[in-house]
Image (tube, rainbow, N blue to C red; front, side, top):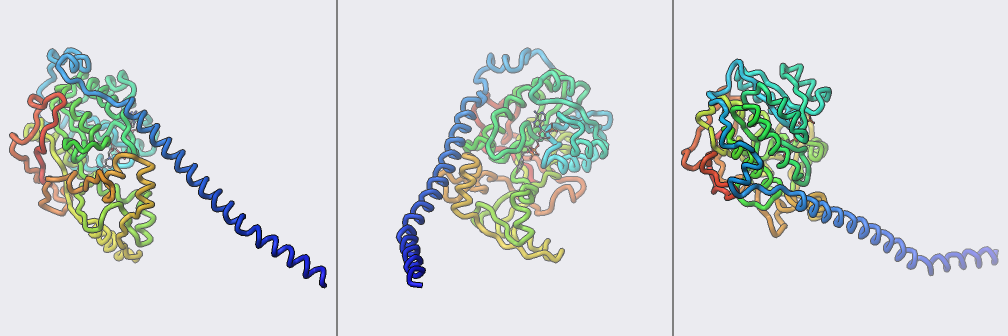
Length: 404
Ligand SMILES: NC(=O)c1ccc[n+]([C@@H]2O[C@H](COP(=O)([O-])OP(=O)(O)OC[C@H]3O[C@@H](n4cnc5c(N)ncnc54)[C@H](OP(=O)(O)O)[C@@H]3O)[C@@H](O)[C@H]2O)c1
């Protein structure tokens, strides 16, 4: 008994004397693991950033430079475009991904009468097959392979380009190289009109790679001399109903890295498609213009209220808004050094969504495709860029808007 007591006392004493050391060891191990992980992620982020800078596209600054991008620029003359209609073929690029299906739906709702042709690298992918079943033709083509684009553009009257890269946290410079190939292929194949889905704020020197790149793509389409219209989208409504927000919303929390009373302007992908088709039908009114599109403007807490009202009707939990905290912001920062961090309200280079989409005006909170024929109100053409007066690299000031 005495021996047992002695042994247990000894064991406890030993353990007690080791306990602080164990705690210190465990703490240090966890701290070193976290620091190592963070260091690795930061290094990865730094390398990705450098890689992006090294691979970034530079727009030509003079006529000779543009002639190398678009050989025989001044000699080629595409047929005059009178507006999309029956008998025409409309090529849609970048519409088989996360936001594309709704775009195609919007295009179809505009009833242009034109045959819709969808470009894809893989006609067998389920989203492409769904579009085929809906009446679209599929054409195989790869934005990294100019020859495939040239053959895809043969017989095409007009093109709507929804995007030239995958939707990623960090802007990928390939987006611009691909746009160059696509613009050249379209030009050479005699495509008569291009509508490009650009980004709201693309012309406002934000320094955000996502937007700067979209501006470069715009420039390439403009300089190809194919008549064109830029539709600059504000935030897609569908963006808020993706994997990164949906599960939490269904449980009653909508979290975003914005103060609850900040306003954001939105457009839906379906409206994007409808607007693109409308511009193509009435091309004379919109040729050479860059137009910011917005269908609704809401505070972030109002977005949560809208989700709430919708869920209440289906017997799901009410939704409250939660502004993302410091840790979430750090995670965003580690994932992407451009858009998310700069949009964050605590960042020194904070650019509010309001600033980005300013001064797009909102007249109606209803989505336009629900209205039947859209009331697209064109603005004073003097405010808008045209293919002729748009300088090579100089950015125009805030320009034309379409009121949805
Ligand atoms: N305003 C906003 O709030 C907002 C939100 C999200 C996205 N966007 C923009 O919308 C665009 C599309 O986004 P998303 O989310 O739909 O993208 P996504 O789901 O990643 O889909 C990418 C699309 O691009 C096509 N694509 C990619 N690489 C290609 C290649 N080498 N050749 C041919 N096609 C290629 C894909 O076609 P296949 O795989 O079938 O070949 C697919 O249709 C992007 O420019 C993005 O920046 C804007």
